[in-house]
View (cartoon, rainbow, N blue to C red):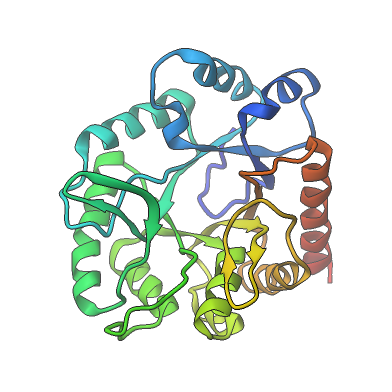
Length: 278
């Protein structure tokens, strides 16, 4: 059910959330694939695993983690990676993704995706860690660009050039979160179009689309609103640059009726079809 070629699109998907298990199993809605939060399914047995086993019979599944902590100075958690590898094998996950960030230090987990300084030393730290993860998993790791609310004074490299260097050095793939680009651009004062046009064309595995909370002088990536027009506009630009890339609507809070998510997903389909019919 997964594409045989990494460059082949899965189509249009949604995040698999517990509130929608029953509807998905009984109504089998027109969704091409689902993305799971990896950590929700690492405990053997239980309700989430039961429903995932049922749903994966009808839909391809992608894994999206929040605990890899690539940027931390702690050694990689090999027990965690073993669980990720076993889950990916068990459910035949199409790919495994995580974030360009760090989540803790000295085994103290902050429950947040914390930004990195974009300097050569950080690249030198990340490159062997990404190689280690990919060698262990036996597949390319897909890395998501973060949403950021500040930048380090010591940063010497733009985020888009930093990601480009990681791709060149490791062969990793990119989960390009279009909303995160918009949020970070607003908060840090850069042009999101410069970002989009700098990412290499052949490295993008997946798009995320999501809503956020605009607090006036700051945007917070809350995943609890509809996708806004400006993000839809960036999505259209991204489609024209990167082609038909697997796209999903990411909603994690204030979950709406399922048909509202389907409406947003269908909007993404229409925009993608328009871009590639013209």
